[in-house]
Amino acid sequence: MRFFPVAVGIVLTAMLPTARLTAQTADGQTVYRDECKSCHGINGAPPERAVRLYPKIKKLGEGGFVSALSADSIVKILKHGIDKDMKSFSAKLSEDEIEAVAKYIRDLARKEPS
Image (cartoon, one colour):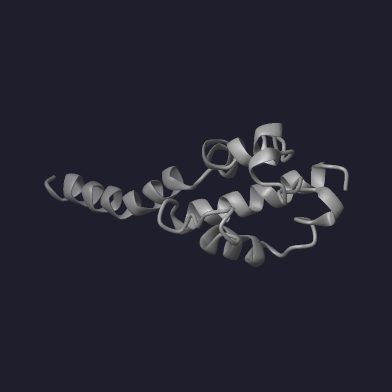
């Protein structure tokens, strides 16, 4: 009879990493809204304040700017930033969060008229 609780414990322990990974999967929209919205706007259109601060900032769908980029290119931008205007997020976001934001930004750009 002692075997059953031990076996159940082993099975549950083996399942924990899978459950933990699922719970930790980043939500690109949530991370975008927390980290990117202030400059790029909730729907990818920068607010006037951001346009005044960063005159080169573009709408995410503008002229196919983001739509033309690969997911890897967006990840690189998020990791390294652009010039002095866009900071790197590599120290602030996990790899999973960066990839989730990149996917969300591509989806957002597809919804915006170019």
